[in-house]
Image (cartoon, rainbow, N blue to C red; front, side):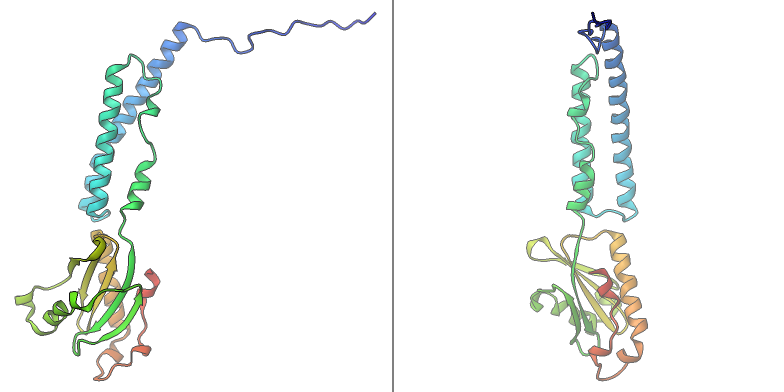
Length: 224
């Protein structure tokens, strides 16, 4: 006769939560929901600061601000209509702001560099399929008008498909940069540095009456 003792396996391996445990869980979730709501409001303030510092462009700001406000309103409505906070994560889209920021970021498409003296193109990089009719008048204005009349510094125009053409003038030349959208102030500052580096590195060639474009070094290509 066998000496093995077979014990009856319990039917309830994972005991059901009591009403008190469920209530405590709900209160904990509600606190988490309010903490997330607080973070959303902080993100709104941070977004305004980032825009003021030139870290995000106008399209990114509008899209992200609208997203945060929608999240806040939905979560506030959820908390108003429920006693506990269970399921609050289903109301929000945590992590979507990263997707929005990338979607509305201005992407650099191409460059074209023109001589301020001759008005002729020196080099073109990337996909710079822009009708010269759109920018030649502005280049001529840079070339001919006094700075105090025309206005000193960078200019931009919106062209087909919402693309933005940036004019970055220097002493010898002007860089035209084509973006998918309005770039942030930080990107414009970066473009200004690129153009200054270009003129500094190529000054010996740029001062010549007849410039040989193939001898120009192009820091621009590192950003395409």
